[in-house]
Length: 88
Image (cartoon, rainbow, N blue to C red; front, side, top):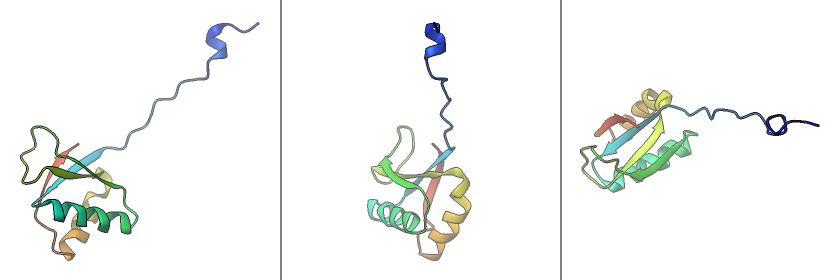
């Protein structure tokens, strides 16, 4: 008979992607940035602005840190270059 520890499936550690939070000048810009990002296949989510982040609106955009350079370039081409960046 198997012991209780042998019956339990092995636990895997969840691998979390390093996230970055972008704070745009307005809620409109944040939502537009999310639509641009997701429309081009990037993971992006509008979230409440994190505590301690000096913000200009009440929401921010959370993205994968690895995508930041590509997103920054894409946003600049669309006139969305005015945002602050913080680790999330």
